[in-house]
Length: 373
View 1 (tube, rainbow, N blue to C red):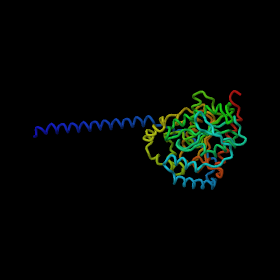
View 2 (view 1 turned 45 degrees about the vertical axis):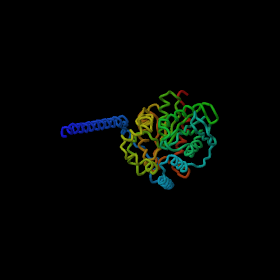
View 3 (view 1 turned 90 degrees about the vertical axis):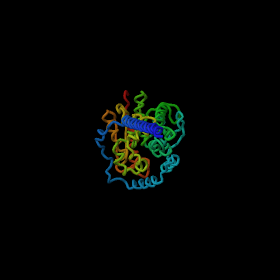
View 4 (view 1 turned 120 degrees about the vertical axis):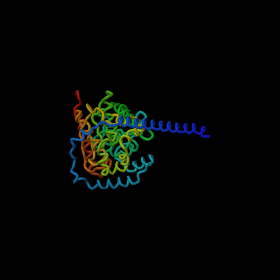
C-alpha cells in the first residue's frame, strides 16, 4: 500500500508546487503590467505653473448674498443626485433649463444634433461654437441656453451649440471628434445657410472647456483657420486629475465635490488605467489633457474660474503655461463661486459680471486688426 501511495503523494506535492509557481508568475506579471501602465499614463509634473497666482476679480468680502442661494440649490441637487445616467441627465436639465430671450433653431451639423442660439441684434457671420460641460456624460445645448443666449445677446454673435456624443454610450475621444467636426462646419455655415465666418470664437465650460482648449490646438496643428479667440469657463485641462486643488478644494466645491469627490480617493494610477477604456485614449494624451501639450501660437484665450472650486489649479496651470509659451491668455478668478457659476444667472451678480467679461473679450477681439490687414 505504501508503495502505491508514495507516487501519488509525490505527484500531489509537485502539482501544488507548479500551481503556486504559476500563481506567483501571474502575480509578478500583473504587478509589472500595473506599474508599466501607471508610468505610461502619468502626467508630467506641472507644479512649476502653480505660480504666479492670479489676483481675485473682487474681494471675498464682497461676494453677493445670492451666492448662498446658489449653494443651497446645489446642496439640494447633490442630495438627490441619481446614478442612473438617464435620470441624471434629466436632473441637470431640470436644474438649469429656463426660458431665454433668443431664437433657437435646430440644425444638423454633419450628423450632430445642434442648435443655433441667436439673440436680437446678433450677426450671422460673427459666430461662436459652444461646447457644453457635464463631465462628458450629462448636459446638452438645452441645459446651457442661459449661457449661450447671454453670450449671443451681449457679444452680438450667433452661437452654435452642439449635442455631442457622450459617455457611457460613447468614449471621451468621440466628444472631441464631434467638436472638431463642428469647428470645421461653422467656418462655412451660419444660421442662414452656407457662408464664410467673418469672426469665429470657441467657448465651453468644464468638460466643454477641456474640448475648447483641445480643439484650438488641434486646429493649429492641422492648419485650419485659427479662431479669433477662445473662452474656457472652469476648464478641465489635465484629465489625470493631477492638480492639487482636486483635493484641497474638495470641501469648498458644492457642485463637483459631491459628484466626483469619491473618485479622488482612488489612487490616480488606478484611475488613469481604468479610465483608459472609457476615454478611448490615455488620460495624459494632450488630446484629452490640453495642459500637457504644446501651448504656443494659440488664439487669445479668456479663462474664468472660482478660487474655491476643484478645477482651480487646472485653470491656473494652463494659463501660466500658455503665457510662458508666448500665447495670449487672461485668467479671471472669482472667490467662493461654485463651479460654472455663470450658468446661475440672471439673479447672481457675479454671473452677470463674468458674462460681461466674456462679451468684452469677444467684442475686443472682433475690433482688433487681423494679422496681415
